[in-house]
Length: 434
Image (cartoon, rainbow, N blue to C red; front, side):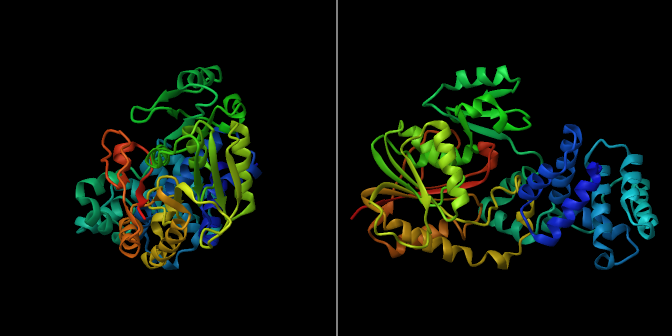
């Protein structure tokens, strides 16, 4: 059996080569490698930690390496990152952090890895920021590109940006939505107690629970009974913004994995009709299986391309348009997202605007169009909505109160992690007036 550190080294190498999402790579690997629970937890912590702190760790490597960073073997870079992360951010003994890193290194690199790590220990494991200050220092300290920090400062100010940066590390909370068709929040908490799972009510949002550490949530009895589904609190708040009611027709344009569809069906008391779409068969199957598990008979899931208009679809009371985005609000779940180059995100607003425009064609007169993303970017959020309104005089801003402390009742809302405790999210509500 491979050691947990060997597994992490292979994971990091695969991430760098394939550019895959961290959660997908980790899940696939854990299905193949039968690590004991304790080793599995350590591997996940180290894997995500190295990705989260990559820029900080690389800065230290550059300070202590006599070899130019770009000339260091990629596997050696990963080992140094792993060793430094253990020295800086975990309680792993220094000897273990160094010795295990050296053990995994190729013979010719063992002395180099040992030298860098032990030099850092001799200097008291203190990061020397030298002459760095302002944004450059924040970039190294919080392992975040300078362009992104500047973007957030221009949007939210320095104080809120610092909160976003600090909140981008560590294990994200696990929120679930109570299936109110089958049980109450108190009843679900009791069900979790039977399985020794800690669950508590969320102070901001009714029927939202936060769970403690859990190994395989899909293996729980409460899950199999369809008593809940996993959904971040900010995504649940987006459903409150949409506020569908019974007997309405709702279209969820980009629905997978289905969390918002399920919550809206429950808000509608399973009366009415929800058309739930995704581009791929496999993801549509996820929605269908989830709806069946929870007894949501009003959900009709099928394959649909959000960029293409389908005249066969009925006009709807509510159309939720949760578009593909940069994901800058879910960095805590997918830390590699923050390392994308700014130029790679510049075309997204065009696609988002096209999907929003296409989705608007399904809204009946008096109906509501909801535009949402899981990103914190004005270019993908407010600017897309403002451009749509300028080009579509038959739509107007619509303020739908949601009654949540700290979230203003505006037609465009940003759910900040510092307020909700969940992901960064954006939602705008527009009404067809003619």
